[in-house]
Image (tube, rainbow, N blue to C red):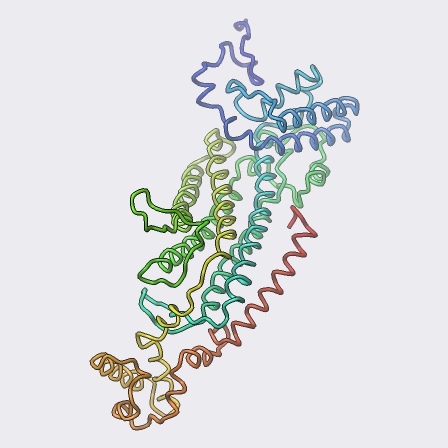
Length: 477
């Protein structure tokens, strides 16, 4: 017969030697997956109730197991629970402690499930909660952008840029509302992600399902899932929902990073458009005069780690055969890190932005220099019957002349402008002011003051509707 079984692992019946301690340390995930304990216990309680409902275990056993699981949760909450590498992960820790509390009843809990579908459940429950938390954080960020920056600065002019060269004047509010649109799309992406996260895998067991007459719909209802996974092999090996979340998170970090870049530039002496509050800046250890924009710089820098986490998981999954493989233990650290990083970046931005000082006079001065009204002069000539390409060439000559004479277009005399085109009349000067250049951009989505006011009003209404949705649905979407 075989050697005496001496392994004490839950899977130890097959093994005749104890696991090497180096292997225990190497394979242990408890240092990071203990974060899932609430979800593991909640999932186990729901599984326990389902087993009792289906008469797979007795109601008495179910009560004992549920009480034990709740006691374990309280122990972990209070910091009294001891973690050990030899128990590998949070699932085995909870099971081992449950055995200590309920004895021979505890092993019955694992009937009709595997760690494979158990961990998939825990991660989905965790990510459902965190996705809602991030969506709520983005609500707060967008509210700050709309009310503290856009609505409060509707009369501030700013040079708009292309190729980092001054292009045309815009309202500062219009510029800020561009970020509102970006972050709103991030919310839409996260809501779409949530639909794919909100699928319950429990009951798939290791990969093929179970022989027991379980009720997966009942368990899903207890746990608040809207769907039950359709294929047991896919259920335990699918990490698409994490990849999709990491992708959405990466795009959101792109938007935070772009805004960070502008805050860094605008707060520099060369631009001088804004000043970040002292509470959100740092100094230099050697240069007493320095005030550094560390928060936007760090957010810009943290974007790289989120990108790296996405590439990490894509690379991890690209060559795995069905179904579960231990490689997939490596999915949690990039996920947890991305969730924590994104939340912190959104929260610090939300706190920092209201305290930014807008230097409107500096912005308007910049918007008044560099021939930013050149297109408007060309448009004026078009209204006088000149084809746009020819009008463009005429204004180009005017710009060259103005450069040679160290003037702006609106500083040229009428006679100087008539030398470019005799069709130019005195009324042209009314059209070359920043206010007119901006307010004549009336096309939908343009920077005209009336447009931007309407966009701000619509944004406030949509945020009010979102707040109602957040209040009503809580952790559900």
